[in-house]
Amino acid sequence: MKNKWILITGASSGFGAATALAFAQSGANVVLGARRVDRLEAVAKEATAAGASSASVHALDVSCSGSVGRFLEWVKTITPQIHVLVNNAGGAMGLDTVANGKDEDWESMMQTNVLGVLRVTRATLPLMVPFSTGHIINIGSIAGRVAYEGGAAYCAAKAGELQITRALRLELSGTNIRVSTVDPGLAETEFSVVRFKGDEARAAKVYEGVTPLTAGDVAEAIFWVASRPQHVCIDEMVMKCTDQAAIHKVNRKIKS
Ligand SMILES: NC(=O)c1ccc[n+]([C@@H]2O[C@H](COP(=O)([O-])OP(=O)(O)OC[C@H]3O[C@@H](n4cnc5c(N)ncnc54)[C@H](OP(=O)(O)O)[C@@H]3O)[C@@H](O)[C@H]2O)c1
Image (cartoon, rainbow, N blue to C red; front, side):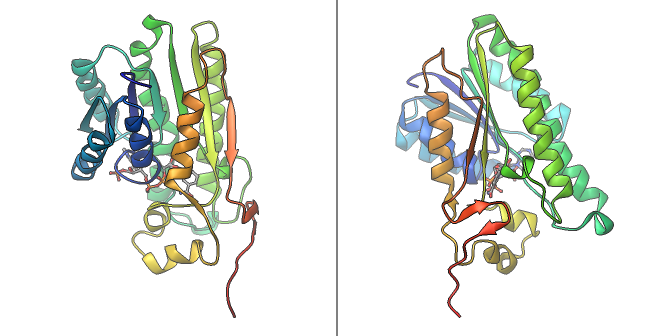
């Protein structure tokens, strides 16, 4: 990936930050967006130390069309071409049943995981199509494939991401642009702390007695998908930790 331009959304923590480092180690230019610019700057510093050709950051809120527009205008001032777009920004808010669901949680999940992917992809395609190459890697979830109680809106959002990936691959047929989704299961990042709105004890329970995926595991998979030869497209990758046989079947080694 030496000298290639890699745009990663949600690069201020978790999978996005680890993916920035994975590409940096191969000598790529990483272009990073998220709302917390101080965190992005720290990731960029690490990426530079890890060997990135360049590491550039700019504020990005994928839930806002104006912010996405400003972000891409800035991207165009540093490069005319993006080789890999990782649509990673997103997450879950709350674990309420539909009966108890909150509009603001539902709207936030749809804005980031669904509309954010659409907006950033639309704005980035002009930096891929004229070059007849590019790779869009969306970050889905096993939640987009199997429903769970309390997950209605998040599962719907990630199912939306999966169908966007599939539709986009059809629309881009003949352009030489690849479209992939990487769909992880249980992974320990800030995901659960965000979901439970800062309740760290509740978030820690999600991973109790389990050896979950790490952000590095997922970043390695994203990098592998991106680094296949041009004629190979990994359409959909599902990855789970060994302790998670299925969304509801998690082997917890809790001492009694
Ligand atoms: N961890 C898991 O178990 C798991 C499993 C499957 C899929 N996923 C998915 O993987 C992706 C990354 O999650 P993660 O586990 O790495 O969680 P994380 O550590 O909470 O990272 C989420 C990232 O998304 C960014 N983000 C959130 N809302 C945003 C917005 N409106 N605009 C721009 N950036 C935004 C956050 O940055 P700012 O807050 O700075 O904006 C942060 O960098 C998400 O799409 C998530 O749904 C996670």
